[in-house]
Length: 191
Length: 247
Image (spheres, one colour):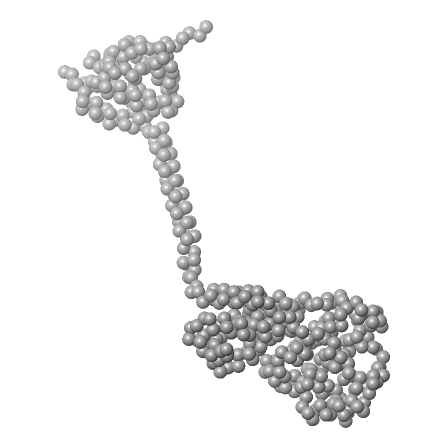
């Protein structure tokens, strides 16, 4: 099976089928990254299309030895960030109304809320309300989409900064989910 | 070990992004600090409880993505037509319509001018003399071809001893036919059907036609279909229709 380097060279020689193969190879990974950040299937598919259109434009000037996966993830990540910034009211699986209700008077009845909503969806909704960089770092690491150094490269920051975002993200999530998933009172050692 | 140091490492620790030394620090501290232990447990629970499955693209979706990208890429690679080329068909159509309109207007104006010319042209006074120099008619006609007719008549007419041009009966016939046709178009003549079934063209005159033989005649009906029209003196022989007295 030809790798990226071979396919890029073949494309640059004029074989358009090589681009088709590149799309087949990377579409799923790019989609996973886009879905992780956008959390919306249609938006993720749109992002994949946009990324490959940009790749087609960039391929003639690209060196075959370049890390194509890193390039794709970086472009996809930037596209998703831009898109979310432009559409601040991006559709989420949990609406703002649901989120307000979760943080409202029912917070002292976590079992009831948990019964009504799937825990995973609640956490995902909380993730969607995180600050941008914390959310991206959390999602990318949770779904194992990018390594910490790749995230640092894509976000143009240091590895230490990415780790700091990880810590803040998990701390904020814990606070958000207090009374919803985690009890408000200090938990005794669960040994 | 202060808690803040351990807390700063808890995030990476949850995702396995700490070094061995950093992981040891976190474990050691959380064994001693119940608050930090609780914190770490809840952070770990978040990652555990949150679904980590990602939906996959179906074959159909991959095909659609490929189709869309290829379409977008081929659109971009097409040489862009210049504005002039893109608008050329529209310009051609507009020019064609403008020319058609102008031609139509020109035809209409020509027709209108001809009509006006036929109405407004100076009416020639034609005096026809017979051999006895008798004035037989004073007709005002609007046909522009009459002077030519007169010239032809002069050319083809007999000249008597006194030098007076006497038109032939054919000339009269042509002249009257043209004149009555134009008068008919102006509403000065009308076609009527006689008793015998023949069509008569009746010239409507406001003033009596001053015929030499019958002065004061009100109406005269001329039969243009007569092949032989007599010379002016014989206009008396032309059938005249006297208006029927109303009962």
